[in-house]
Amino acid sequence: MSAVLAQLGTERRFWAPALETQSRADWDALKLERLRRHLRHAAEGSPYYRAAFAAAGVGPEDLRTLDDLRRFPTLDKRTLRDRQLAVPPLGDIVAVPERDVVYVCASSGSTGVPTASPFTAEDFDDWIDYEARQFWSSGLRPEDRYGHALNLSLFVGGPCVLGAQRLGALSVHAGTLPSERLLQIAQQFRLTALWTTPSYAWYLGETALKQGLDPRRDLQVRRLFVAGEPGGSIPQTRQRIEALWGAKVYDYYGLSDIFGSCAGMCEQQDGLHWAEDHIHWEVLDAAGEPVREGERGELVLTTLTKRARPMIRFRTGDIVSFTTEPCRCGRTSARLLGVHGRLDDMLIVKGVNLFPSDVEAVVRRFAEFNGEYRLVVERVQHLDRLTVEVETAPGFVGDAPGLAGRFAHALKSASGVSAEVRLLAPETLPRATHKARRVDDRRGALWG
Image 1 (cartoon, rainbow, N blue to C red):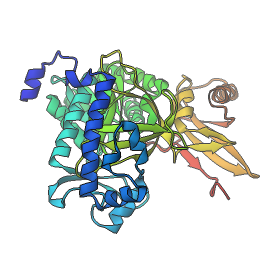
Image 2 (tube, rainbow, N blue to C red):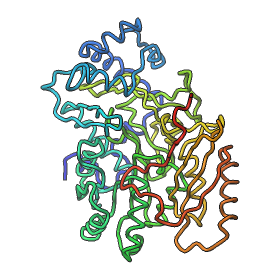
Image 3 (cartoon, rainbow, N blue to C red):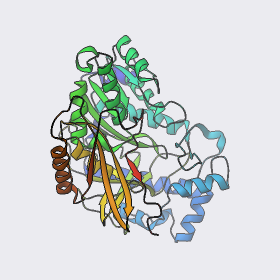
Image 4 (spheres, helix red, strand yellow):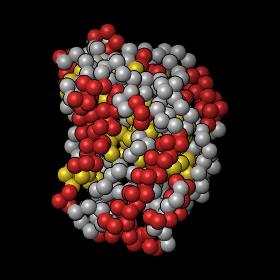
């Protein structure tokens, strides 16, 4: 057991009590101090930021309040990719010599060019300490046996397992094993906690049932950490997974461009606590203006401590809502109220914005469905047509047209979007071992 853990004690509520329970004014003062130092580091060490700040007519000395950060330019994933290609292998956003970089993860490269995310030794240590703090807030303890069922190859979620180890839990680096093998390991080591994606947590539970295993009775998993998809913050989805497993589900949020999990649910399961000592957040509308608490907007992030590659006003493309109200757990950090989807996943159907998570929330209300669905969008005679394909639960023999009609009505009431509903037999839609593909957009050029 580490010296930090020995001092902490397993009955303590907080990993870092003074930090986690400080006032909002203290959070803002801490962020402002770190941000000033970080902007200077970015301007001095990164050729990209020196040029970007000069072009925008701003510099570190112009930051007097947190609101002044809005004067600084944003960047996005395309910028990261372009600068990496222009100055290989890590790009000129990097602000330290390559000899100081000890670890690199990479994005999935869905557009063809994986983008690297470098870390110094100090960056990496900060990250893992935060993961331990986050696991602790979700109730993980040294006596737990933790299974890490995320991709361990270049994926930023892989090293998060080290946070569980730092906390003192027995940790199994399972990775992306076949489901049957993962269930065998869960039984063999009597795992009490598991981290995967929401869709895979559901798939794994279904697989267990097919093998004659009841996850609630035959497995000891009582905590499921999920990330990578909006489902963990959708109450209906979370409750269905919890009922299947007899376990509590805690949603986590992270991205490779910053570090593993940057926000996560405490045991209250009321939003995701933000790593405010490491990352400053903004939530902006389409015009770049801050939204009010509870409203949806794009998440824009600025690192405060990551030296290898500072990220100043990084546009994530993730649509979120937030609150700064203190949590019932006693922690005072800002919380994400939900990751509702991504700008590139957002559908505009007959003028209405629709995310897969909006549909999922309705799907999960119906016990007659098994939870698997897909959105098919087509253009017919210059009009958009949305079809929701949804699988029925095993053994369903009820009124199929009536069920489809009730679901269509519920979706229209919840989202304002009319859709055709196509009921499918169980096991019809393809299963994903990690992130599920929920949208099949067949419209081609949207503006043609």
